[in-house]
Image (cartoon, rainbow, N blue to C red; front, side, top):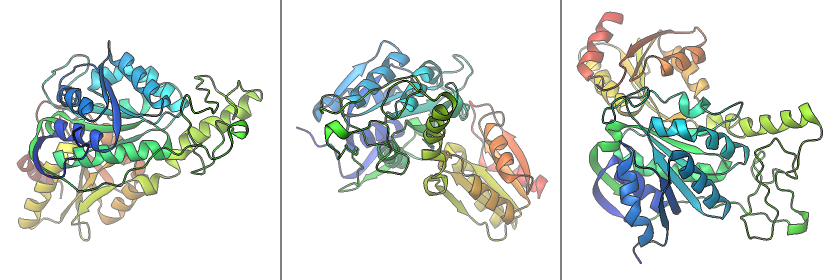
Length: 381
């Protein structure tokens, strides 16, 4: 049988690196529907998973694919799907269901230009809010934004670890450029993986939705383990039955589903930044645009402008405390994004008026260039 972990140096496309990250993390099932620009993930996993004893399934559509993933997780496996923004639209009902049933799974969204069919082969970053707020009512997810094929591998492994730790759908939010870019990817000799926390109480004493490990996260049995494992989409009590105390029971449930992620925001949020000490302007971006912003900041420094950069790696939960700190470093934050202002609105909210937030937006198809960003910096400093 082939190895799950392929240590050494590889020349991978971002989507290929993501697939290898899933295999290395212990994923045993992938279910998905072909869609540009994420199809290469499916293609690679269609032969890599059977090599390591896993299963590849092509779902009837994206909603069906996520249904299969959720069922596989209930059966005790790590599982993943991958799609683009159109497919995320179709998955929303099951994303909310996975949040309510606290099903740890990984969803990869390789963004393309939209709305609707848009331009299938063109890049964009328009799904920023969709993956966080697309399903109904209140819940929380985790979303990570890679900026290289190396991070497509690394963050996919991390996404599986976070999904298991918090029992929550975890999203890799890449854009087409990162998905199709080819670069060197280094796979280490070994990885630290988080495995599912199984119940320790005897089966007859186990209460399915009572947190026992992480302060707000219940242990998770699998179907067939002899433990009760109700998976209701309804608001439920700790036993899994219908709520009997209405408002108060629902409030406890919804607050726990949100706070198990949001309360750990400072621990979860990861960023990369530089040149902040004396910055008059900080360039804020994520994904492929962050590569251009970082290059622009370096060029600006060489030209004598005091410019810093900040790359957001964790998008959800949003790094509110960190962004407030950025506002103390500089009077102006220039947000560069391939959408019409979704990231900039979150930055402005988090700043609370402590800094001027400027927007350099493109609606996808073409990425910002370092030269374009630098020319705008010269106008705002």
